[in-house]
Length: 229
Image (cartoon, rainbow, N blue to C red):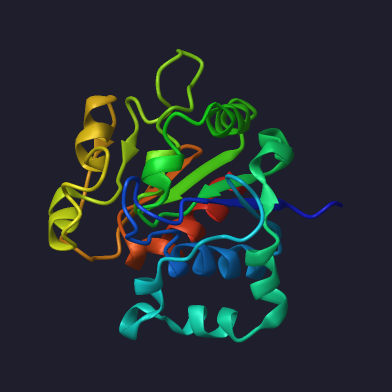
């Protein structure tokens, strides 16, 4: 019996547009799901929009944001190689994976929306009965994937993502192309949230979303659960 497969598709956006301010993937949101999927017996592919070196938001490596999982991953040269040599999105087929997962970090707010290949991979996965998961700003990358009705896969579905008050708290309300909470509601998502920085993840069928970095592991665990349903 072949083992199940998961792919984590990260942003490749290293800076905010028209700025030298750095962004990238939020470390915990890639690393915690990686370990959850591995411990559940999945083969895990680490991919990114452009392939190659994945930019990591430096803030996610500071203080309490650098979780035990992140420290473990950063201390393993073979794991760091996965970030240096990530698989390019262009070579990914959605239906080949049981879980397609998009982590956050503000970067994905810029190179996720409008990316037809990303939308295609996610649409293909979802229409094949695979699990589509995303956490924090990651849902910004899945909004253009469509269901059988031609609407966003979040339309009519329970979902969550980085909320407006969290965006305000980190001072990025004016720097993001749109507020994720507002956009998810506008697309017909049944958006829910808990208090800022609380672990909160939701599953609606094969769609799984998480609110913030603190929700990284729980979102991944719900993805595993959804893949077994």
